[in-house]
Amino acid sequence: MTATLFALFAEVERDLISERTREGLARSRAAGRKLGRPKRSLGVSRLDGREDEIRRFLTRMDADLGESRPGMMPGRDCTGSATTRGSAGPAAGRAAPRLGSGQRPSSSKLRR
Image (cartoon, rainbow, N blue to C red; front, side):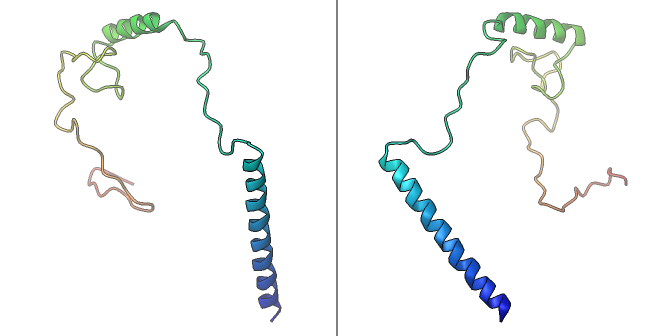
């Protein structure tokens, strides 16, 4: 019986909080206030205006490695041009399977 009373009080309080919130939002809108998350400002970066220098650095890095950096763009250099290796292999263009929570990949290559 006590638990039922507490549940009833909690439900009434939840409804009152919801009502007050709706009233406050309506008041803010009526006052002309913008609601919601503010738009993200890109602002100024320390790297602004250094794009050419970055491109030269990445190109030099690719030349030193002899291939594109793994994970960036398989089979491509930093400018997006195809490397001498060509495509990234048979798995190129295929997405990895998504697993739900608690699922493990069923691969014989995985060892515990």
